[in-house]
Length: 150
Length: 478
Image (cartoon, rainbow over all chains, first blue to last red; front, side, top):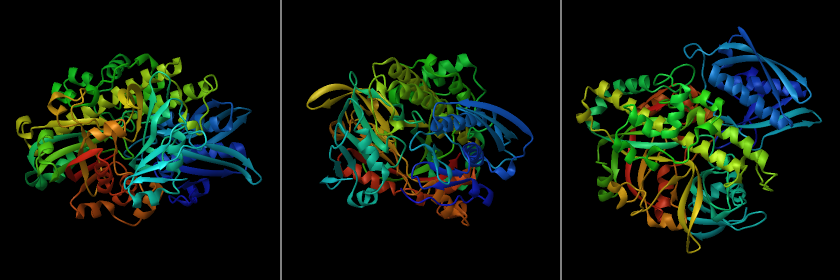
């Protein structure tokens, strides 16, 4: 496995996630002090991979609930729901609040309707893959690794 | 990973561990050195663990690290006892390429290329947000699209009968079941017929700049200096969601069928199982959506060319050479161990390349072999090759599908920082219009292998014969 490198877009995003080298698609690694914060960062990371975060305003809120048996499934399903929100409902977010309830996540997204004239669209994400998908707790906190099909 | 050299362009991963067959990789010595530590080789070995796999787990010379299957992977499984793997087809079901020729000469179009680039860019949306290329389709109409494929385009004035004859499967894969496509997949695809998408998808206006085989070029309608149109796109959100849906369905069924695989993304179910049959029905539906999508895009491009260049349909002389898919699973008859068998061929980033005389080829092409379209990067060239008999014996009638990436998107963006890639491409005669800045950076020429080297390996192996080279002068990116 090749070494991870800092994500270039801006300092704020670099603190949230790092892209690692994957030849065909795009892989990211995330770290957070808590499980809930890890999912929150993953949600924001996906939003900023779709649209430059600095161009998005927190004008509206959307709520989603996701439930799954394992943390990797929860991560996949959360991000798949968010991708659907962007593709089908054209909603893009810049921030999120996550509430944990066992195997259920309740997420509140803050953002607005996507406007191709105003927003810095960075390219489509086709899907959240299961390839090497991981969500793990370590001594220094929580870590996730996600590969997207681009 | 142990690799045994079989000859100058073929390498073997011996059967070991849970592998049911050996792995075989088409590559030259230089390519194989670059691959030695690449996860793509492990993926070739992982694919060899699929129940019912026959022959070898194959990889074409554009092999690179994918998810589950390597990109450039080919696996044939026994149709009666094998499994179907949604990950072996990929998210972009029937991602593919089509090439059309015109009567136009490069030297007459070149002075008006800015105008043509603007017209194509305006006519072909990327498909993000509310924009659509054609009026949004209701559910009933979408179900017709996924059932009929390019035939829907013919019924609605976006195609000719000849277009369908020159499309793999006639632009309609049998067995599509619109009721196996989820509500969410329909929602994602509803406004995306005739849209390009982003990532490595593109629309390119090129000129034929070199002919390697005059007879085949003539049979395919390719003349030196003539202007061509190349479109690379797939099944858009409808296909992406279908794959995601069935990875879950099939993944959940694996314990019941006692299938154990080394990568969750390889999830597979017996072809004969309810889950396998449901996926095959949905996959065919998504494949049909993709053929309709590329057909509509070609029609819109034709309109843009006529408007921008002020030419009549007769003067334009638009003619589809062929349309190939490179992410698909199809039932085909192949000789395995000296016996004809019905197998399900998974091609993940690999193209069907049937040799001369194959009965599924249209009459006009049957004596010559199937045209195979191999796009390169946007700064160099693409190739048209023809399938040969060796492909039928060695690769389940398959060839490479493109140049293959050598640089991650992340690294390409970093390399592009501070550079004006559009000006660099303009300096080598390529006008680029792109919906995103990242789209150009991630797809910069240096991010790809030299496609000429990939095509040379396939020719040296006797799998395909090189027919012509195309040089782009307009590139539209999503």
